[in-house]
Image 1 (cartoon, rainbow, N blue to C red):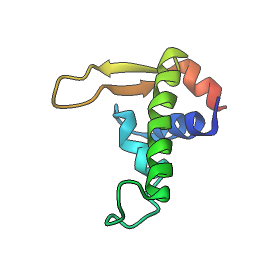
Image 2 (image 1 turned 180 degrees about the horizontal axis):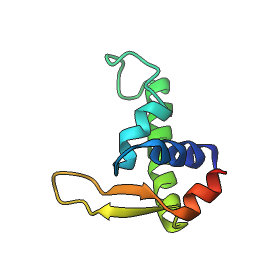
Image 3 (image 1 turned 90 degrees about the horizontal axis):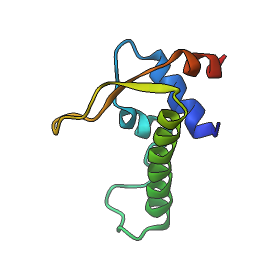
Image 4 (image 1 turned 45 degrees about the vertical axis):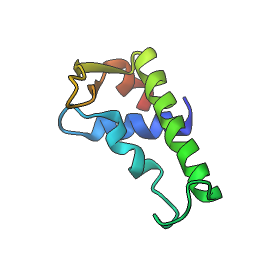
Length: 92
């Protein structure tokens, strides 16, 4: 499990209710640049790559059955997930 996958799984496990995995993306990798910098700023580009990587981490957690969807996306909200027993064991 990658460091991003582990941190995302840990944060989901600590939640007291089902959550959207993307809710934690800025917690894991907060923006490290001024919002007024251009789109092609190296820091912004690097941060965007890290954010996209977290989508990959989300998929890996789901494919590994470490999280399960308890409320599918409905056009207004993202999938809401909880950690599975296998996910809790992976964190131990």
